[in-house]
Image 1 (cartoon, rainbow, N blue to C red):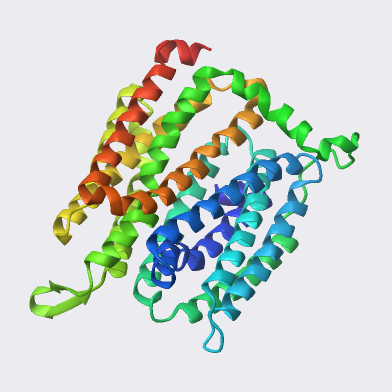
Image 2: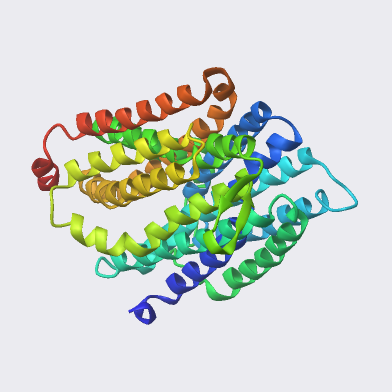
Length: 415
């Protein structure tokens, strides 16, 4: 069935797989980098700025993708990434070191991703059909998680001591993906001519997104999504820094194979790998199981388990309990991801599906912002305060989603 997909789809999945393998060796640990180089509070502010820049670039990039074409934006973004990764290599080399220039390069990468992601998503919709779209997204989700698992496992062991080598590998891979995008991706936008010059302007963009803001049920559902995504991004922000600070050299017994010493970064990579392994192994069977049952209750259970698992990870210092908590949050993720997407597809206006999906992307960006901000107030409220904060986000995700769907699931389906 993979061979039956459009060449653009196959190329896009391959490009994302290669990019995320190397990228996952570095970016999940970038908060640790800035915390070590500057401070955890400043790191939170810097990452929040980066998320804001990427969010704004993504909103405008989604607008441009419908005007100048998908491929042009994707190629432009890939070459911007090459330039940024080259800058990161140079300013983290044995001869020169600057975390501030690294941050500037990170901003450029954020802009590049803002151009690539909406164009890539629009391109996938252009060349897919309702019959193969589910398979396409399942395959993409599986490939992304597998590449992240591989990258994070490697990065956890080598990020601290071999950052320059990892950045060099990321630069090489970025050159490869830029070449693949240029050579394998074909343009899918049919309208290649611009009829109104003002279409490039911000006013035109605001008009496109403004109509979505009048759908209050969708906005409430979006707020619920933001809450659950804010929990997700604790992993690469507060939890990553907390583990790095609390675990310097944890001695773990391997039975007859002796002992092994683990630091916080390595523990984070293990926990993330366990989570990703759950996703890779059980995404398809769980998705088939939930489609035959009531969606809303399963989604709410998923939200609850997801928040409980992360809340435990916010303060526990026992590796076994951390692994158990990771299993809990992984089950929650497997339950809420397919059900939330199914409900989302049912409540959006079919005539404005593109605008709704683009706006729905803010749940990831605002979730990242809240995850970054948590680094600023985490020292004030402490571990147990962060655990309570995580539980509160889980409750908010359930409450706002329930209010949005108060008309009843059957009525939503009948819309």
